[in-house]
Amino acid sequence: MLVGAHEVEVFEGARARLEAIAYRLLGSANDAEDAVQDTYLRWQAADRELIETPEAWLTKVLTNLCLNRLTSARAKRETYVGQWLPEPVFAGDRMLGPSETVEQRASISIAMLTLMERLSAKERVVYVLREAFGYAHGEIAEVLDLTEANCQQVYRRAKQHLATDRRRVAVDAAAARKIVEEFLAAALSGRTDSLVKLLTDDAVSAGDGGGVVFSVPRPITGALRVARFLRTLFKPSEAKWEMVGGRPDLFAAVANGGPALVMAVGDRVVGVFSLEVTADGIAAVHAQANPHKLDRATRRWATSERGEPLAGDW
Image (tube, rainbow, N blue to C red; front, side, top):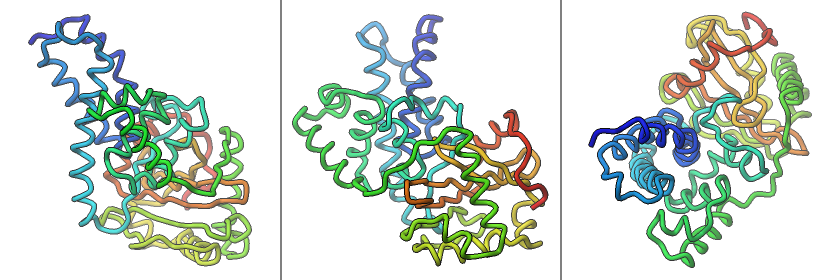
């Protein structure tokens, strides 16, 4: 069926919300864009006169597309080279969606998106729609063709799987910059003890190079081990510059609602270090260096007001 101006307007009015749902479900901005585009193609082909509530219809179609992608992604990640981490998204990007409540902010953090990988596809959908978008259990049940009681059970199970003692600290842009400045100063100092002071005892460091850029195959745990690794990682070398295509500048930024250290060669983002901050210190450092997961970040970075680098020509 042909899509008129009104139908296009209806879909475009829902696009930002659909992108935000898809990103939280898939942990990938590129995959989220594809899922939303596929949703539009189904909207285009549908008999729209029979659709009473476009928002509910679009949400259900998108969710089912994401469920299929999650199932496929699980199989692919069994052969993924090294660790898999979500794709970082900078502050101001509409794909991050609503972030007014604690639950909404938590649902876009790299730490939570990583943690959600332990959920089943259905658990992830229920958790995201409930926590981040405030859908009632009855509405989610209709999306997933479940009973409301079953939906509530799935939600409780998801919450149990995601339970953690860590309490993230909400930070604004100024606080995020200060945290990144302290982290970078310690990392560049060459002193292990400087880093240990910033980390929690059970701190974790994980990196995703996607088999394109070198990264350690498994997470590193414990403040001392993480500090030693970061001290070595931030020691400049010709080999590192060659790997990323030049000597990067280092910037402070906010990604997924938290402090982030950005490595950029010119307008190209080559690495994003997302810091999970708790009341006790930095609990996790998630380093995304897979160039296939930095396309959207690079596009936004190229047109953003990034300020002066914390360190130039690292």
